[in-house]
Amino acid sequence: MDARSAAPDASAPTDHRAKRRDSATRTIRILTALIVVAVAAPLFLHYTGFRPAKELDGLRYPRIFKYSFRTTPGLAPHHGIDFSQIWLSARKMSAGETVYYPVENKTWRREWSSTYHPFIHWLYAPLGRVAFQPALIAHNLAGIAAMLLAAGLALRSAGCGAAFPSVAAAMLAAMYLTPIGLFHLERGQMDVFVATSIICIVALFLRGGRGWAIAAALVSTLKVQAWIFVGFYWAVGAALWGLRDRNPWWTPGVILALNLVFLRQVLQWVDSFLYVAGNTSYFGPSFTRTMPEGLAFALPFVSVAAVAVTAAAALARGERWRDAGERRALLRRISFPFAATLAVQTICATPVTHDYRLIALLGLLPVLVIWCADGEEIGRWLRGGVCAAFVVLMLFALRVKPVTALAFVNVAQVLALLSLFFLATTLALAARRGAASSEPRGAGSPARA
Image (cartoon, rainbow, N blue to C red; front, side, top):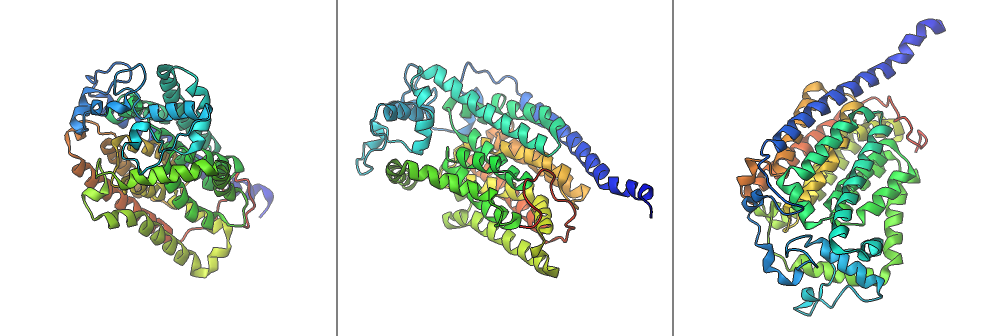
């Protein structure tokens, strides 16, 4: 066979990949249209500034103004109630004052002992010098910008940049047109950074690169729930990617460094955080509403163990574990359903799962696009089923009408079932024999690891 006859065959994989990416872009545009229509339909959601929409009454949250000691400076009692903790603590830390108080004091929370990592208060020191209301707005916009930036860079590195406008539209619609998005903005919460950490850690093991590893570590430090997801995903991702590759090790390395830098405050923070965790009652769409607490806590551990065992067994056939291409092809196949499994389970496993935490699931959207474009040997029907399940997940997570009227227990049941569906999909894809065909382009690390 001469060079001319071989040329078409050499270009075939590239053409096939381009077709898959075009198909993924079309799919995400359809999904975006469905999500935007669904959340924009009840446009009678009237709100001013960051006030909760009227539909938040259906979420059955306690009246926030009861917590008078949590009143935010210069605003109505409920405005930016969660961000006020970060803002006040940043001001105190900048002034050299303590932000973590002894937990044995029953009125400790009135003194506003922080439940956030000291790195956050150091990072937010500039906002602590700004008036509260503009600081709240800057915080919300910075979180959304970080999520959009991570999504855009991840899509571009995977060759799916054409899908970014649709992904951005869906993310912005979720933030500004749904009860949960508005509630997240009104509280000034941090879960949009959890979404960013999901994008960063998955992008690390799909595309490689030290930048993604460092970004995942920095962003995940902003909220404990992000640490949990990143830790679980990293354990499986690093094993499949290759433990000899130095890039993934930057994630735990930077997290450890941040804790050592703020060691004295971290020890105080841990005491404060554990006190809150141990003195709260069941709330929100937590799995503990539908199953024993021990089972809810164990679910992500069991899921990770099942995926690890299934992947190891599949790679052990024919001694394919030694082939980095085989391992990474498997990791690409399970990237989205595995991330979706962990995202739902790590958010909903704790007794207190405030609805605004589900905003973190927005980080799965660009991961889904990349999975549809690059996933090896994933049938059309399976892709369609996973995409449909994701739409259902987001409608329940964002409490779009008529889901808004449902009780927490109903939402918890649906989320638990969907996490098991994604887990089953992950196990099926992990067990499937695949070719070590395509090392991700621009991975930034050698084929052998």
